[in-house]
Length: 490
Ligand code: HEC
Ligand code: HEC
Image 1: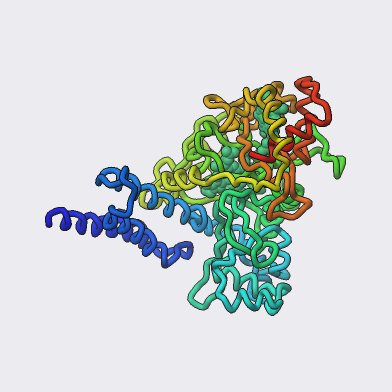
Image 2 (image 1 turned 60 degrees about the horizontal axis):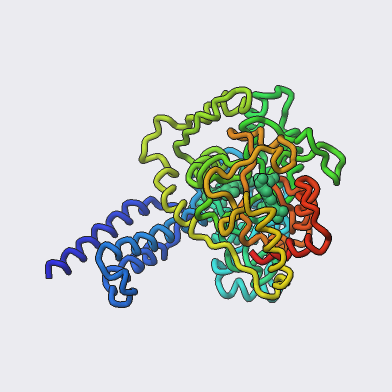
């Protein structure tokens, strides 16, 4: 009896907590989210007999319950939380005005759904009412009218981009989420429209061109003028447009470097863009340092991105950014000690870091099907991998257990991007699920491949040719093919 009472109290207390945490009305929150979490919690408190034997003690059940709740909360944050950044993308940059266009009270021609899809924005089919899906299938939704882009935002169907509406249903701001850059869809309804694939890098996304649509780029001009007073909005727009699909420059507003003087872009003959490839964020559990240049742990980087890149409201501390030689903009702006005196009630990020971390580590790397690679060749390639690659890409993490960093001269590439990070080195990236990029699954053909931090190698074979030359491995053509097949099997 007492036990039952205790359980009811716990459940009551827990729902109270949830209501406190989630009661601030935000466009980003889904109505059924509460219900889902409460049901999960109930499941573990009231149906212990359905659990495997090892989870039947109260303590073990609480651990399991915690896991489920953390994953659901983290998923909600990853997919829908703007951390208040609509103030920046909406009120300041006025990106929503470029999206709706002059005919809906915004600016310019507006962004049509086909243009949005061409820029790599993805649509979550599960957010679309059945009738809308049917109309889409039958070609009855006008994809050339910005009204329908606004409608997709109203349905909360644009992956990683949330619209905010006033009481008259006018679009008044947009905010961005993690899913914008780190989720794809499975194209189940049409290219760019399908079920979410959280963690898969959106290599179709031309985020530079999307930001360049914003009527007001002055905040970026102000930052870049710290290093070069001649910079104006046109220069900023040109830089944003130079990134291309699948790339973003997370260091631009720390150091003001837009191009890599050590490399030429093979397409333009000009210095290559300093932007880096959007990485997949699956298969990261057990990996020590993250990002191409090993800035820190997952929660370090999440706090960094949510504040400094996405412009949400929260605290961030990293005194390495106070170095004026390496990070002139960040040092001048105090980015290394952001919102030192923030009221915790106003901090929209810090409380979400634990569950976000949990969710990210729960994202599994996709596994290839048998037909995706040649298994006999992969087996031969495995033997070559053990000899030549495993010391850095250590199985089954495919990165070093421990300090997974290398100075540029150890992998034979230029130091430009490494020098833009505190450790001045490159991080050994984990390789599980890399077949996705070699095949270009759920992305446009022209955006597939692109390996290393700046996409300098188009295919896995090019990567292996690089290592073969640089490390003098003496691989013959068959052995190279075998190694490729092995990489495709991970
Ligand atoms: C505008 C696009 C964009 C958005 C939005 C974004 N990221 Fe990223 N993310 C990147 C890029 C680019 C990198 C690589 C940066 C680098 O290496 O310098 C990255 C790197 C990462 C990594 C490191 C992965 C690894 O191990 O290499 C994680 C984890 C990550 N992001 C999580 C998040 C989370 C969580 C959010 C939301 C809070 C988020 N990102 C929002 C573009 C984005
Ligand atoms: C000295 C350590 C080291 C060795 C040895 C090494 N790698 Fe790497 N590998 C790295 C680092 C560091 C990077 C990241 C390069 C960058 O960010 O531009 C990398 C990148 C890669 C990538 C690109 C990953 C991506 O996400 O784009 C592939 C594929 C790869 N290595 C495969 C191999 C293979 C195959 C071998 C053996 C022939 C090998 N590596 C040997 C350290 C190493």
